[in-house]
Amino acid sequence: MDKRIDLKELVPIMQEQLDAGKSVSFIPRGNSMQPLLGDGTDMVVLKKPEGRLHLFDMPLYYRRETDKYVLHRVVGFRKDGTYVMLGDNNVQREYNIADGDIVGVVTSFYHKGKMYSTKHPFYRLYCNVWYYTRPFRRLFSYLKRK
Image 1 (cartoon, rainbow, N blue to C red):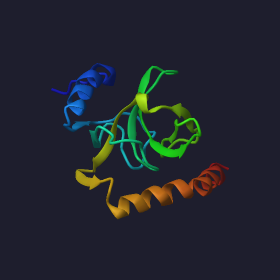
Image 2 (cartoon, rainbow, N blue to C red):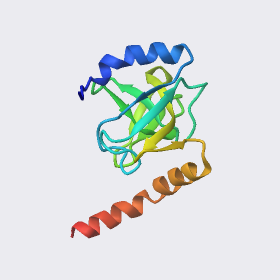
Image 3 (tube, rainbow, N blue to C red):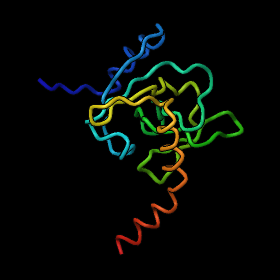
Image 4 (cartoon, helix red, strand yellow):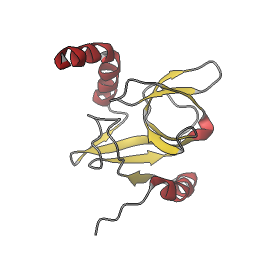
């Protein structure tokens, strides 16, 4: 039986486990992190962050404006201490994400059945290439539509 539960219902349980030093796993929904994470097909493993997040970390965080939990990547830092986030498949950055909004950070993920660590050098290379080629990919996508 495939029963789907809203992430809002799971977050208190996840938070309890993360606070106890354990890791938690879930299958994210949506296409904002494609091609890295498929909609409902790949799984992420979270742990509680140890201090501040780093560039390209992938946290699960709460967005007050939309009343939703979001899994995106850290792409910048503001002077006020908040983070700038961006989904791999998005063009709009999200601002003003504070440490208190962060539930957990991805330490590994399963893509097409294979596990990948977010500490692996190839994964870090993917993050850099994917982020810094974004303007060219947008241009290519625009030209492809024309």
